[in-house]
Image (cartoon, rainbow, N blue to C red; front, side, top):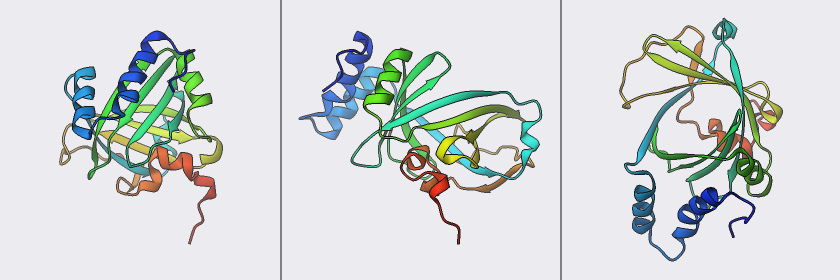
Length: 196
């Protein structure tokens, strides 16, 4: 059941996205999603470990807090707060380095309620830094809480084989390692990992 304390626009969005799937097949649910947002957005993202602190030169960060609504498959429902804005994001299963993504701004109060009532703990907290290198924007996430010590750099691309400039501070690519997905870090935080 969708929480009645949410704003009417967020409640309608949740009913249309989450509630509309009951009794419908996958094609009907996908068609409903297309009607909600128009053309499906696709996220093409590569993810890397960070080698050292050279990226910090002049970088200013912004606190992100996010959690994940439990799902039964490889799809992701994320609730995020950045500054004074909340976001509800739905992501499809990853295929290579690409996946479908739908993101909707929602009132911060609704996002706070969803994080508290719908998302499984622990929440992901991180400071995100945006750094331009060449023609691309890199996002460097410095994780906090149960994921302290982990720093990841991400770059979003227009297509999977797009060329980009590699900064010296970028290390090993971990795009294909599901342990580094934020949703996985919520279930199995970095501090719990054992090294061989």
